[in-house]
Image (cartoon, rainbow over all chains, first blue to last red; front, side, top):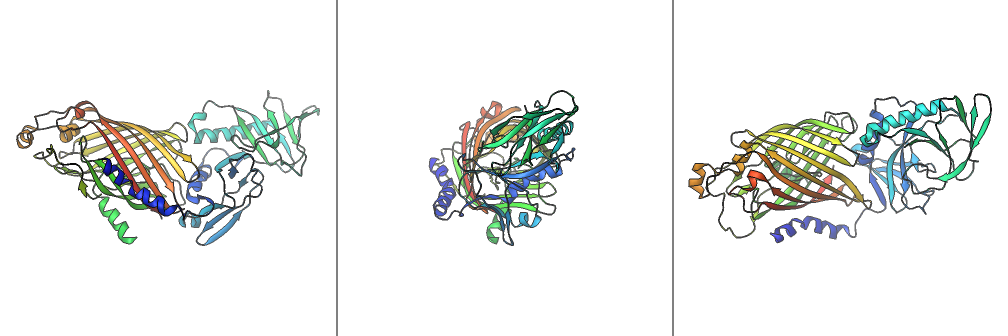
Length: 230
Length: 280
């Protein structure tokens, strides 16, 4: 019987020996597998006008900031470079031809990468955000997160995190109350999104408080505004 | 490759697997298909002390409209909620004769061939003289609930097994879906229990008076209830973007009336399989 069990493993052993020198060069993920995760947001029927969904490719190695990483959508009939922002996000192209060709997302550097959808709040050109609108956006993000993960039903929106670039722009934001008084919020280094290895982004966290009408003014355009659930 | 695929389709008409693949959203008009071949070492029949090594054709196809073929089961995903899956399910119950169970095709998230050889010297075939149980198409449904995106509770109910087509089985399970181990390896684990009605257990574990006379097994009237429990692990290795090695090991223990059947030589069985599949 043990011989039968062992024999049943022959395809595995055969493939292991063949693959030892022929594994596909570089790191890659299946376009189909990513598509499956990304399409959920598109098909979501709840309110989502204040939020957006990106594909994030982030190194699991804290020492690798990912600055030089390039991601290419590679299929029989296509080679499309997907530019990543400093947080590792890119707009995911939903292409039927890429799905049908069983295309891959190929990474320019070897290493361990987390590939996942990331929901954030839509940025405003003027950098001024009504806190009531930020709360509404956070509620939309939470409703979507619960749609995807039933275990989040006990989570609540508690605030937002503005994520700034590490270089080139001054990180900062202040709170302007209805009487015109401004309050600068502290800047702290943190990860852009929960679970990211790179925790060195300048961030400003605003926690929702009361029903007072206030505005959050970003000193420069943030990379992302991330909803916070607790 | 065309010949291999034809073999998979042919063999897929000879065994059952009621597991359902996870819902797979895709562009309208697209499909996601795996086909391949491997081998499986499985008990000759439920409760057998000997194992049978058979080729394992693998087939799993999912279409954009929700319809899927997975091993020897087929169904349709009707839910548009990512945390819930449900729909109708059809599965082929393999025949059983004095050589043991017929076998079938496998899938990527659930697997199952051509009988080839029987291990271990025959110490007295308890199925000799037993009535042949014909292959049957079972109908039913499935309902799965995701506790988190990684954990899902699974249920499936199938009816129509056995010569009288009255056998029914309810399978309740929990699965930890595809934990990534490195960038190309994924491990899934699962546990399940199966409840069968009296008609099912009587067909597969009971011994009628006529069968007792013909086989030498004592008369046995099987009852319904818990039939078996099992745990399993599946390892998927993405060798290239198109080639995959799917391996699994499952331990199953018969319970209740099924376990006490005179046909049962050993209540705990091990099934090991491995197959190479191509993603089209």
